[in-house]
Image (cartoon, rainbow over all chains, first blue to last red; front, side, top):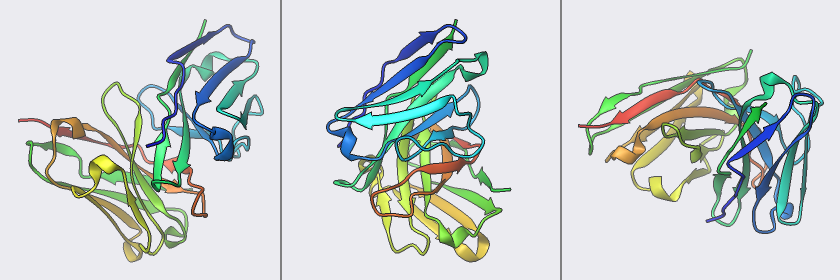
Length: 108
Length: 122
């Protein structure tokens, strides 16, 4: 089945930019979606269809996808952005959902 | 307001069965596919199953095929997950999530319920 790899952790200072990668074989040919999960809470969609933001998600969150890597970028990072982030695709070959391994973002 | 509320979790012995429910409100339930996603304690998200609006398409993760059955009752705005032959490794919080993809190759999940904890242990 399809595998999505993410770095276990990313640390960033407040006000700086965090970039979270999601690696997969030819992931650029798939649509990638991103979720934020804070401790004890359900995941929340922050980016869908590679780069679209749901209503209510700050413009500081953006996404891109090309080649073998998709990236979630969080600009002007705030303390409230500290959370786990997961990428997700649909593997049409096996008709199944696939989540990345998850990245813990720590705001220094 | 769109809302999903799971129920039915609890403690079950290995080999046992459990049926989870997800009550939906605030949207036209039959117009959307629905999914179950689980998360073992301290671990990442794992997709479990998807069912289309009128149950004509159903998909499962390989490790759940043959043991788990997803179903829905559009008249009751409810989603279900029947879990049989449960194992310790099925211990997780189980979330239901609405599917916004609306196309065969596009599935993304929003919103999610608060989850229900299933513990498989003797």
